Length: 291
Image: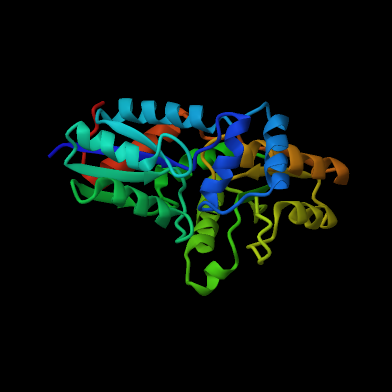
């Protein structure tokens, strides 16, 4: 049996002219307004012109491949290289068993399920598929996060990308898994003061999960909190939702309130995080360490 990993992430546009087709891809071909394109273009401009997500994810892929000693192929949900292309590369290299791993620890039918569908379609039954649906309670992952917040004297706010409230009626585990991750990290780090908030909700005209981080900062200030550490446990890489939603919007909000706000360093290709991913893959594929 020959194993390979398909490592998956959301993807991001490479150039300003890619922003409209990128948004259309996210919205499954539906027309995108000029104002939406202009807004996103301005956000990318404010964080340096483009997201570092693609480069960070490639570094994660290369480091994971080196740690595991088996091929790791990269596939993006909404941009190149596509998940289907990654599946084809794995098959062309002789893989007979593929493990799908999304760089998002928490399961939702509105997110992770879409990655699985794309990978299954790309493989077309030509190789066995193992798929990690969630890894929100994976011990080595929790340990890396705990190390980021241990010893802080600030109130820690764990965050993740919001999703439409309708997932609750579907019995979706997303919110419960996020709260479990936060609780387990807080226990490991010995935190006494922590809360959870959502971020990055989209203006779709329907209710989204809350509280939103900006509103939550208002609440914390009203309670007397003056120092906050944001720990975005739903994200593992620097990208727009970190560099804009937290480093620009949340920091501006905190400055207006008179709150001192910092955030943990993103996991990116931190060797401890890569090792945590490798242990997850080894456990699932029953591989032995090459170390």
